[in-house]
Image 1 (spheres, one colour):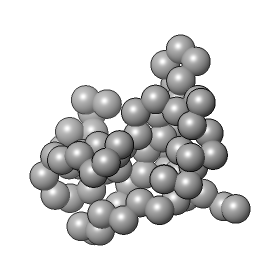
Image 2: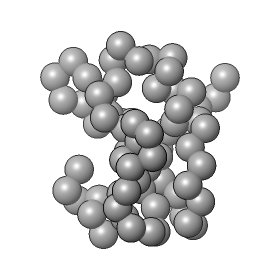
Image 3: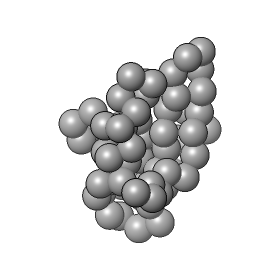
Image 4: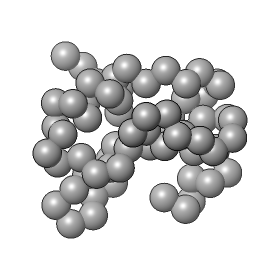
Length: 70
C-alpha cells in the first residue's frame, strides 16, 4: 500500500507523520492507515490544512499559519 504522508518529524524513538492538504478537505485515510500500521512508533499525528485548529479523533488539524510551531 502506498501512503501519502508528506513529512515525518522524529523526536526520540517516536515519529510524527504530517499530511498537508491544499484545500479545506479534512479526510485523512492514508494518514490513519499509516498510523495504524506503525502504531508502536507513532506519537502525535498532524494534518495541515486551510481551516481552524481542531482535533479529529487522534489527529490534530493545524492551520497553515501554525506549521512553524510543530
